[in-house]
Length: 480
Image 1 (spheres, one colour):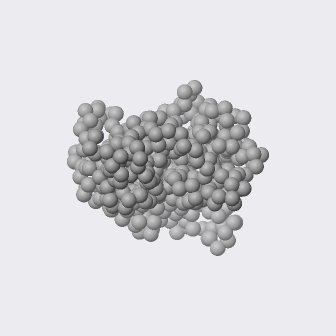
Image 2 (cartoon, one colour):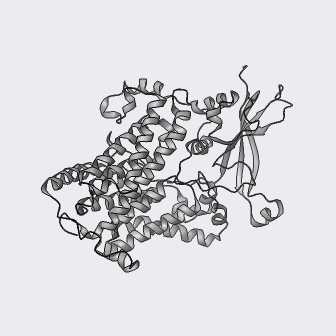
Image 3 (cartoon, helix red, strand yellow):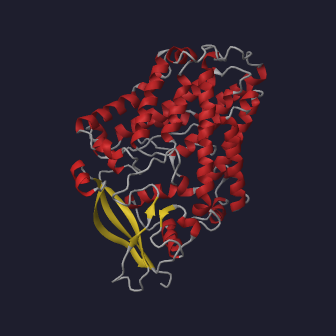
């Protein structure tokens, strides 16, 4: 790598820009399909009401959002469609064929457009991978186009982003629950994670020595390997491949929206063209040979961005070694140079909130039927689907309910929408028990879920075993 130009990282740039853009496309699609129902003008947590509160917050404490000045469901759709079109153009490589500033401009628009959504997204957008996507989009824009070599400084800043993401998560775990230190965390995690995938049950049923090995591998992958991303080649490439392989295991065994996928994409920043050619000989070793040296004006722009990100990095660096380490925290309104981390503690039992409805007038003698969600466990016979990198926001929030209080404003509003058989709300679900007919009563009850053993599955055909706990809300009706 040169002092500025890194011509040996052309393959990495292609993966970084197209991969991050593809995930922006997924994020905008997710918002187009769900935002208006969850947060729109008639949503569970309406943005217009939130904006009124946001306007009273000092500017330095609120993020950027176009919707701060005006929100409408139609404007939200326009922003999502614009974001998807721009992201698709990068996936196809169109901006990369122009001057160096064109991809930068596209990614800056993607960054600000999606930040506009995240800033007003409230609890439905309170996930670490939202700010991770924002930071990644801002940073990869400065990789430029095919007319110039990838900048060394930006390649290293992306490696620093992966370091914060992985090492921060590792430190959160070491400082968190004892299950990470006694190597028992994976006894529970595959079963109790927010949204299991089709292979989560098989992973859970692996021998306990395998689960202990998983935890050891996690600690090595998150506490040791990230330092090797800054080593000379080919060590840095090997470290990147290890990160990718560990993330692929998480992809196979769970549904964490685009968290694992974006980590895979970003880790490719440290895989050099000679290493790619050695593994895949059909990929030319001189992919970036045709690019001219970076002009002074481009060096100045990238240098300024680098300086800003380096200065902002002081806060997450200090946080990594703080006694009270923050997890998924932003230290500035632009959501750059953030702190990351997840699952400092592992839930040991899976409690699910199940919503039921009836058409009967008397709830005491009624026949109750369940609503089915698309991703979260419900029907004990159904195999969980693979949804990631798509993000089912309502399903994720349902997982958090038993960990806190079921008396969240959005949840009570959801029950009201179900009593009205609100069609947009019902489209977020897999199945409503009475189709488009409005029920007379709804209620929420909790169940304890666990994966069935192999013997239980053979005997009953059920992939989950559940035990009733209690009715936590209701029965309620519109007449109350």
